[in-house]
Length: 597
Image (cartoon, rainbow, N blue to C red; front, side, top):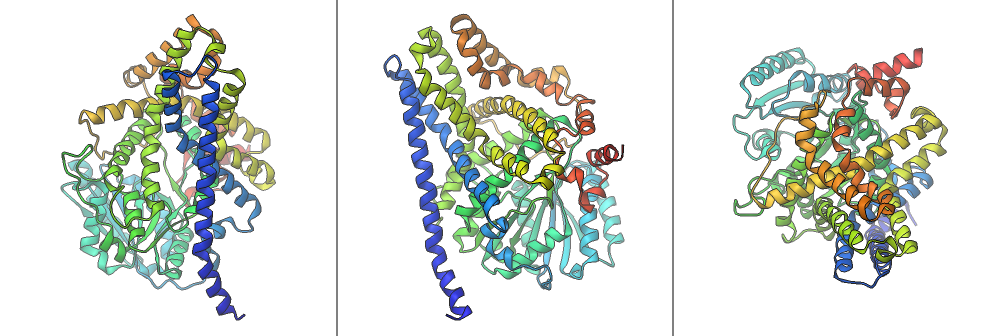
């Protein structure tokens, strides 16, 4: 068989192989969910199976998709990470053909969307990328567009001065255009649509960045080369990771995300393939089909969550796929970054904006022509937040039922109950467990995280942090969803990205409901079934300690101490890319001083 015939045979077999992957994944998820539901039903049958037990099983079933899918994504991702010669090429085959020597011929617009941000930050974050692109042979093929939705007059004036000076400085090397809209119509999606209407026809691709995005020039050039090599690729998402931070909260959070992100993303890319994710930033899009097929409608004001689409990214991804163009993720790690919120309060604000945006996905579930996997992605994004009220329901109803029975043995069978408890913990942490094993098995990777002992200490601290954080977020989602039903909304506002303390008064005002519920559960169980308190702490403990957690993770000394001793160290602190070194990040500079000491 000739090489061309072999390639044609492989391409012809690919859809069948992908269908089998998806059937396998669906089967694994379905069987696991059924087994978990059956196991809980057995556990709750200790004193007979009543109506309260049925409600508990239903609530548990609502929480399962996120856990079970995460578990199997992580398991598949782990196997690929350990067994595949090139995990990135395994899930994004076009990447294997890119050598880095292919000429750049496409015109790429680099879009950075800002709103009421101190302009010095995005300017500083852009500088290393601009320098890298300007030094490449492809500089003439890139054009930076600073798309401002700022409505604060003083910030707008500062933007105009700074970006005018930047355009003049780079005039001989790269083209820069600054545009500010006076009305924030359609939020970020409207900002980008305005760019498309004005300048989209002049470019082949658009690299979308947020105000806190940092990407290396080699990563951007690789995205462009992959897009050039695959004409039916509509969106290519990079794997975004957190920049090294000296904020204790951000440091803990981004370390946990770093542990779980790669195995989860590789596993999901293995079966989602050309129906991959789009996270709205640090990604490249093919402009012609995006402009033709991905314009978002304004939802009727009478809708449950009406108006303009807040979480635009996943809707644009499924519309791109409906148009016949692939959406994929490139799972390279270490060249695409973002800032994480520096405090628990800011993290909750960002999360609730996502919650509102994801609830708008209901309106797109039944539009004609969507791929089945695309519909799954929308449903999964909704369930990410609908699982939270189910967890709170399990806590409240489970506590009440247990207190009324007065005995753990009368409420739940010990053997099956412990099995459910252990399996839930394994599924919660499966993406992180996969990466922990991978890091410990690779000496060079282990050293980049600070060495085995320091890495395991970091894992321990981050696990405790996550166990405290999750129920706080679940409660926040639950209350916000209730408020959504009454018409309360959030908008697209600027984030507080700089490190700052959270005073007691602000923490108490924001988190007192979580605290009240957490302590109420513990006091009720303490008065009725004290033996259940150790298990209840896995949810109620985080709620009860939410105020101290918000304060402790923003203490001025907490983050610097963690950096100084290497707790929750990221590989970029051990060997930072030039783009991060140029930003003079406190965490990277402190890590460098520690290595020299």
